[in-house]
Length: 542
Image (cartoon, rainbow, N blue to C red):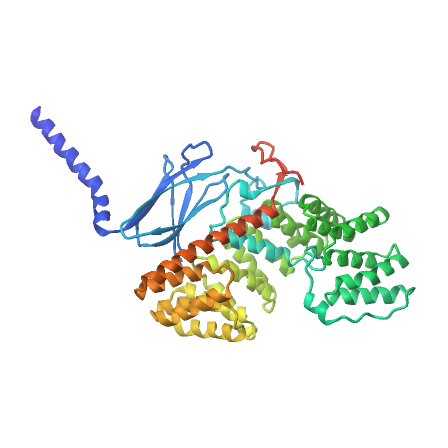
């Protein structure tokens, strides 16, 4: 019996050695690691959460799933700067970082996921299919909440792109402007006033519309008010006057005007302008209902696009996808609806679907720069470069040789392919063309610096990256790369200063994004057949 016990003890000791061996090897190798736990709002472990680790220096991503205890681990890491992201169906994505790992260091992180109301897809369809083949839009917007209250930290490298794509999509809405911004330069240069007959409707309307198009909305108001007085029931005069009020920063007058007109003539165009006025007044729920009313009265491409873009802007991704899908069925050759479908897909992390919509748009009209611009934004945060993307950007550069962004996007595409020294010359040539066309192109200087780092030409890299700092708003990555270069050059103090600047600028960038998200708000909505889901956060008063 004693011998048996001794043998069992030897086996147990051997097993311990086997278990501890990888840890010992890791310690001996000096590798770094990140581990931690993911829990819900009640501090309960969450299994099956997908966790990504983004290498901010090398641009690579690896992922893992949490185990039954909510634990995750990324071993065998090189020293560097990383971002963590975690996501699970039914919860809002959360991010953490940046994490700066030193040689042989293990960093432990605890993440908490906040719940969100799951959005039901049509029966038997996945989200990507739903965007292509959804039924008639069927949802109700009940209010608006603050998305920054329920998670989604601005440090996520993809999140600013989601926000940017949504805003850029909304900016494609033509003919309506509620921002109050207008061309001050044009207004200051052109100070003459047309001479018209006070009682001539046509000349007053024409003069007002010409001033409006010239970026002089305040000057246009006098003529358009006169035209509207001469023919109170004329929609064109009413439409132009409402736009003049909006563009001059007076949405309340536009709202009063449109409500009075609707009382006499209930027209879709008047509801669309009323929606723009409501949005400018900070009343997005009322705005989206007016956009919906306009699209229901007249399901034209502009009205459907405006409705969907408003939903997208306020993070109502599933409703936006349904409205864009209807628009695509009715207007399959609309470039901006395809762009809207792409932005909505990307916001839902359907990246392949997002790219496919944009490639479809490019195939429809290869000379239209809009889908290339959107694909370029998606490309910036993509971890790989499908061959068809690079081919599209190469075509863009050849079709529009005078477009700085065309050359820049193609250079980034070549960079993402990571072919090494073989692509240094073509990449540099495209970046040089972009800079020659736009000497203040900060992002082009940034990527020129990255190329010079790959070539280990650190002196030139410092020059390029410093230009990127000077020409870019909140240049966090340029500071990060400068810190890397100064470490290579052995200039420890400069590296420390740039690291500090990187941290400060990153915090400012995150704060700015959170402020923008807070100001926009997030629509609280109900999908048909979604009655069994938990309640969304209560809408905030408007």
